[in-house]
Image (cartoon, rainbow, N blue to C red; front, side):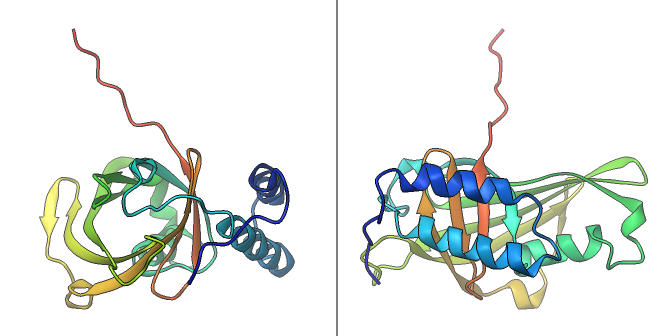
Amino acid sequence: KELFQCAVDEPVTQLKQELQALGDCRGDADKIHRAFQLLEQIENCNGHMPSTDPLLNGRWDFCFDVEADMGTGVVKDILEGNSPIQPLFDLQDLHLEIENNRDITIHVNVKVLNVPMPIQLTTSIEPDTSDPTGTTFLEHFKGLQVAGQSIPIPADWQRSRPLEFSYVDDTMLIARGNGGEPHYLKRGKLPTTSSD
């Protein structure tokens, strides 16, 4: 694996605009294919080493998730039309927060029968020292909370899995799970605390 050079002068801005213009890709094979192409072109312009670059830290909002992985798959199954219990759920927010280039908290804020039911999944990541680009990590699941209550982690989650942050800049993150599927995230704003 190596870092690639961008093929055009202002590629990322142009590619991001084209990706944004695609809109909702669900169920449209042509749009999904084009989104994959755009994400791969953007990845080739990565100039940062996520294992050490502070740009990785902060809030990231999920925007594009073609193939769900272990974390987002459960959310999709429940909240999209495939589940008979889907009408009970109202997804308010899905994002992750990264601290110290090592600690990740995935926040799933839902309402169940109009009652807030926040879900938090916590993981830690360690850089893969054999990767000179600094984009590959091993992710370890640490904990799961539903409405503030700790839930035992399922046995099949109690293992490490590869995770790649294949592109990061000040506004965009591309992550790939163990299946190689891309997740496009946009930088969000962390809540500010006022000091009165």
